[in-house]
Image 1 (spheres, rainbow, N blue to C red):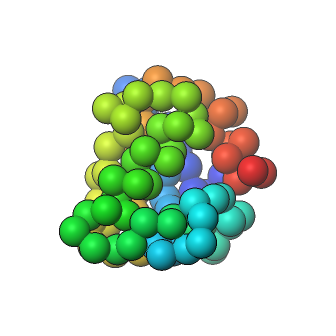
Image 2: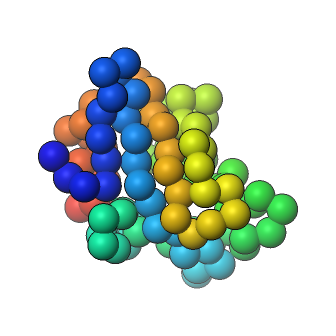
Length: 97
């Protein structure tokens, strides 16, 4: 299993992400150390980047936004998300997009 995601006993998957807000477009950008790097078009102002991140991940996985929860990193580039309702195989594929 990769360093940037883990599955808990309750089925929840935790993602470690490195976010680059204010990019030209929202996209996956490969690995950044032990985190998956994501470029977000949203600015890091008033929680807009966090909201865009949740929407971006939910859309990429075909999940409702309510299935994606920002666990930590509200004001940091390094964020930890918890996701319900998907598999580790699907999550692993995000790094290849």
